[in-house]
Image (spheres, one colour):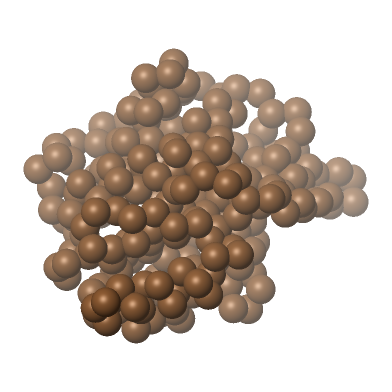
Length: 254
């Protein structure tokens, strides 16, 4: 057995209780953390919140899933997006998309491809499209970069900061008169043969999420209207190949 397979077996054995494993056919690996549910709504005293850890969904898949659920959310008007020529972009080239409130949001090629795939899957099921929210892009990128830098894969940082708090720190809050909020998070990571991920890696990541009940629920949730995607590539743990972390933050506020 090669050293890479031995290393992979060791990681799988050490994380089996928390993560599910999917062979991706390209020499890398994808892991899935158990889903997490958070709900919160504003009241006169501030924000109430409760969290519930859900059991793993038992399906192989890529990514980790976290959702937060607010009450009294109504549908928002669908925003239009122009993702440009994503297919011909390199994974780290800059793609400009229209943000939720107008204006421009800059994504990398791989981030833009993931965004496009999310809306393709939703559109195929007559689910309203997502628009890109800059605060959610910021929270997603910071988390992907932090996981690469500090060698971990989880919704909570080593300092015990969870996904909801990370989004709040990026400015996605109940300020400005909102009374309820719903957020979700999917995570994935993959090793790769070169210094950059391939745009086709985005399709494999989304396929993995769709095969997992909890992650699919976030991706196709008709209540979500806003999204931020962040990807970061670098050395991860003791893997010889570079890895890319993917974080997707979903949200809606009313």
